[in-house]
Amino acid sequence: MIRHSAVASLALALLAAAAAAQPTREEKVRGDKTKVEAGGKWIYNDVPKAFAEAKKTGKPIVAVLRCLPCEECVKLDDDLIDADERIQPLLEKFVPLRIVSTNGLDLALFQFDTDQSFAVFFFRDDGAIYGRFGTRSHRKNWIGDVSVDGLARAMQGALALHGDYAKNKIPLAAKRGPIPEFAKPELFPTLKAKYKSTLDYEGKVVASCIHCHQIGDAARDHRFAKNQVLPDALLFPYPHPKSLGLILDPKECATILKVEKGSEADKAGFREKDRIQSLDGQPLLSIADVQWVLHNTPADGGTLKASVMRGRETVEVNWKLEKGWRDKDDISWRASTWGLRRKALGGFFPVELPDDRRAKWKIAPGKMGLSIEHVGQFAPHDVAHKAGVKKDDILVGFDGRTDLLRETDLIAYALRSKKSGDVVQLELLRNGTPKSIPMKLP
Image (spheres, rainbow, N blue to C red):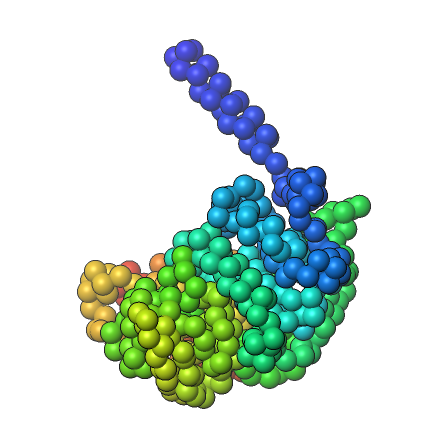
């Protein structure tokens, strides 16, 4: 008994020592700065310096915007920063810029999917954008969206565009977006009182950082504060091409891995192994470039012209998007969706039931069946909790609707059709017993 107790005590002591040895987030951020600056290869958090160096050398800029510490994309980042044989020779041909916060970031220049924590831009010294790299469609798993091979391909493509800029100048102009309402993140009303234009390395550096997702949150909150309906570009930002049936290879430059049968991509005539050279006139380097075009396509739809290399032939494809096409995307993985859950769902988090559980509760195909996995317990995320919603309840009706099959559909419906203070009726199954609960939206 004494021996077992001693072993257990030793194990606990070792675990405690290991935990104590783990660097804090503050230490990770400061350590990154020390490590990268000591390497001497990257310009650290100094955009003007990078553009000045590009003008001096004639090289393009590769700007890596990476929130710290994002554990999900750390392997990709390590391969980029350290000695990956695919990346390092290419880096020599760029001015490398590392950005670790969005404080002071020029939002006219840096426009990207702010729910990411790893984004790459390829710039010319005059601010022209050759392309973007960095895609995400899952909270943690990025393997199907980005790869080091894909980054190397994008870098090669950017160098080719840079070498023939005179020819590409006009089509590249569309890679710059409109002038934003707020020039820098810290100018948004919800961020203005909390953050400055630079990180506070003299104090608490982590607390001083504006994270990428906070930009999107601030843009949405600004609309909510003015009692405006969210535009689709803020509700469904940067739609993933896979939501339209176009599965792209993360190891290549906008190359099709698969086309889902019956999808918009299939109807347009895209085929497996097609290399999409341009979309809506813009040259493409990655999945992120496809998303940029989709992000700037009206929600009412339209036709995007694609130039496709199919074998040795160049083929023109007309990709028709019908009204409501954005709604097919999934926003449930996004960090920003936590704020939308509070406004639209009172703070509960539903997920789709698997087929066996649908069968158990006799939920017909095409009808709502969402398991409530989490209910916020603390303000301001506790509205559903106060109304009586419980974890493991099954949502089968929302405001009289039974056809909202995903959390994304629920949020979109509530934000588009309901106002603060409206009451919605929730139809639930609790251990098989029907429950009807009214909930006043916050």
